[in-house]
Length: 165
Image (cartoon, rainbow, N blue to C red; front, side):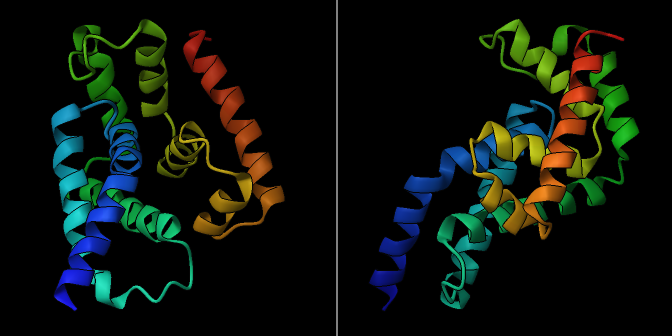
């Protein structure tokens, strides 16, 4: 039983590590080290709850939910509001927290994402991972129509932020 659980975990880790890391990175505005730590925490939760996973949803959806909850809990523990996070990012010269090998448009996107609400950042992260609208709506607990409206508004907001309007 333990061997099967270990193999199952290894498969999940291999399949979803990048996805989890990218989502954490987006939530933490490009802070690579914190994103790595949070990714590790997510997979610790996956390991600890693997026996409880009933496969009512896909493993991807289950791991996304764990990741989202870990990100939100992390932000709550730090007691930093969305506005404060945005201030921290704006105050950093040349976005030192973002890997230097990333291009300017990615840096601009992370800076703009820092200005969004937690829910909007989450949706943006899902879109960057190229998740289907159906999957995102399921994870968020909203209708696809509501999601499309939110995406439209997020795009408008990001465009204004990136163009410094």
